[in-house]
Image 1 (spheres, rainbow, N blue to C red):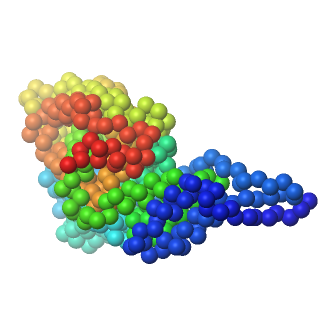
Image 2 (image 1 turned 120 degrees about the vertical axis):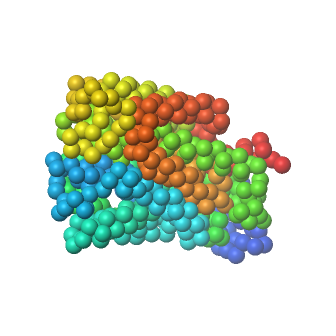
Image 3 (image 1 turned 180 degrees about the vertical axis):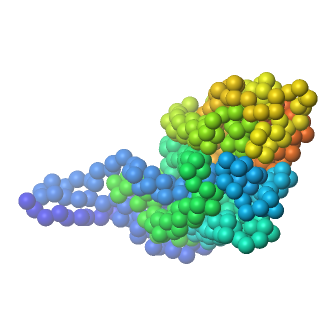
Length: 540
C-alpha cells in the first residue's frame, strides 16, 4: 500500500471557505491573516495508495459537547443542594427534638430568623448573578464558570464550622453569613453555566443540552434531601464543599466558547475550540461565518447602548418575565420547607418524602423535558408545565384546608385560621394528598419551567449583552426567589397556609397565559438566526 499524501487545494475550490475568510478580513481584525491560513487547511485531500478523494465530511460529534456540558453543570448541582438546605437544617434550628439537639434554647431560630435564613441564599444569588455575568463577559465564559466555586466553598465551610461555635451569637452569625455566600455562588453559577452551555451547543441540540443544567439542579435537590435523611446539616455542608472542590480540576479541562473567543478577536483559538466541539470531520465553515457576521453587524455599539435597541430590549424584558414566573409560583418555598410541610401534613419520614417528591419526580420530569424540548418546542412545554403546577398548588391548598394544621408537636411551624376546636396534632389521614400534590407540582415543573428558562437565556440575548443581560435575568430570578422564600413562613402564618398555596396556584395559571401569548418559539434555530429575526421584527 502506498503512503498517505495530503494535498491542499486552492481556496477557490471551496466557495464557502472563501466567504468565511472574507468575513475575517476587517481592517481592525488583528489576526485575519492567521485565520485565513487556518481556513485554507479546513478542506484538504487525502490519498490512500493510488486513490485520491476529498476528506469525508461526517456528522457532528456529540460526545465532546455532551461531556463539556456535564462538567459545566457540576456547579448547578449545588444550586439545587443550596435551595433545599434549609429543609432539613431548620428542623434542628427551630427545635424539633426528633432531628437533633442544640446546646441550649439560645441557639434556636424563631420564625422571623428562619425566614431570613431561607432568604439569604436567594439574596446572595441576586448579587452573584451580575458579578458572574460581568466576569464571563470580560474574562471569558470558562473563567467566569470556574470562579463560581470560590463563594460556594467559603459558604459551605462556614455552614459546617458553625456547629462547633462556642456561643449562640457566633453560631447564628456563621450560619447566616455562610448561607449568604453559598447563595452568592448559586447565582454566579446559574448565570455562567447556562451561557456557557448555550454557546457551545449546536442549534439542533441546544435545547437538549440546556436541560442538562436543570437536570443537575434537580439532582442536587434529590441529593440534598437524601443526605438529610441520614446526616446532620453540618455534615451535609461539608459534603457540598467536597463536591465543589472536585469541580476545580475538572473545569480546567473545559474549552473557552468559540463565540466569546471570536468576540474578543481570538480567531485561531475559536477555530480550534469549535473544531474540537464539532469533531475533526465536521464542516464548521458555515457556523463560523454566521457567528462572525453576527458580531460584525453590531461591533460599533457599546454594551449598554445595545439595550436601547428595541430588538434587544423587548426580548430582554421577556426573559426577565420568564425568570419571574419561574420563581413566583412557590417553587423554592416548597423546596426549602418541604420537610417541614410534610411533617405538618403528618407524613412519616418527611425527608424521604421530600426526596421522592422534590427529587425523583423532578428528575423524571427533567429527563422527559430533555427528550421533548427540541421536538415539541419551548412554548408547549411551558404551557403544560404551568397548568400542572397550578393544579399541584391548588391541591396542596385543599389538603391544608381539610387538615387545618396549627402548631404541630415539634415542627416549629405556626399557621393562622385555627379555631379552638381544631385538631392541633399533625393529621396524617390526608398525608397521601400532600404527597400527590407535590409530586404533581415537581414533575410538571420539571417538564417545562425548570429547564426551559435556562434554555431561553442564551437564545433571547445577543452575544454582546449575553453575560450582563443573563446576570440581570438571574438577578430577577433570585430576587423573586428571595421574596417568596423569605416571606413564606410569615405569609402563610398571616393568611393561612391553604390560602397561600391557592395564591401560588393562581400565579402558576397566569404563567400559562404568559407562555402562550408573550413568548416566541426558538426551537431548531441558531442563536444568530434568532437575533436576526428580532432585528427584522423590531428594527428601529
